[in-house]
Image 1: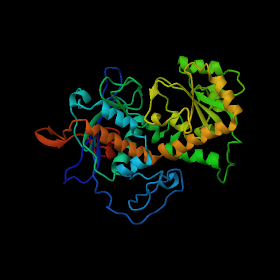
Image 2: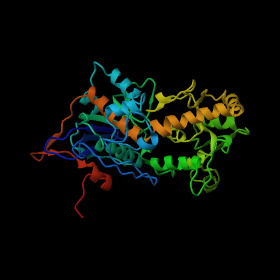
Image 3: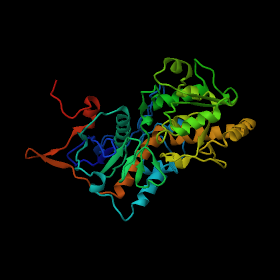
Image 4: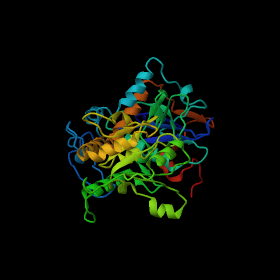
Length: 430
């Protein structure tokens, strides 16, 4: 688990920093506490020149306040625009902030308190790490990188906040930020998954690279032939570790021997399994149908599957992620197919999809237009982060910033920029 804070700097402080703490929680998680102070004089009030760095997997559209987004979404122009203001974000991504609005409404009349957020001690600082305990893994760092990017590119002032951020699969029994929640966990506020920055361990890589490779797989590149809908394999693809989870084991049993399924369990430490069965995320885009199954809680694969022009087939989910309100299982905007949690209707629905290829293609097209080309773009993620900060700030307390140490008033912690490199709070100069 993690706790974070966001503070505005004083007139004398003209920069942006982050504050971070990690410690064990009663359910064996870890806690991170951060303060964020945002400065809005980093960029000029108007930018008249426009440069376009759109080549390469990590390309981006530089800041352009006067040009760019004009009220009508264009994913090729706007997808990497990190400086949309609040009004533009609402215009570009209607429905994306439903989870934030739900959480704000849930707290009306019962403001979040310091005691609720941080049950041990308050934390103060400019985007500073203030204490750590235990290991810091890539998912925590990836989340903080994404948050920091959204903060330093914000074109408007954001409120001062302090909050708890949970990176574990278990949520805390108090107001906190997490990657996913169950329907009855209304006290939880949802943040974007860490994979929107990068997930290096399983070889997925950066999110921008995932999006580029998905487009190149389906649209073609100088080195490859496009995987058009007609060329895609007419099978339901799934790869993953079962982790002895009954739901996943049941899914494998229900698809075993089916002509329409390419479903295999991955054994991460088995060289034969890894060399023969592992599929990269862009290789998923070579299939018409992609299965999504939850894991210990939610599964991080969903956002990747939503980057393919394929039909996502998902069981009824117990866990809600920040983009779930945008998923439609029926109607003209249908962008995935839902099956029962016990998969008892999976075969029936798969045969129906195969029999009506045009309908399946329509759902696949809605999937890519809704998610890869709009709501799961880097621009949308930055807008969501800032909406989350604003929403939390509207119903939360005003954090403290200073502390007394050795008789002197000091900021607490280490700047995020330094901690991101050293991954520690104290060191002798070297």
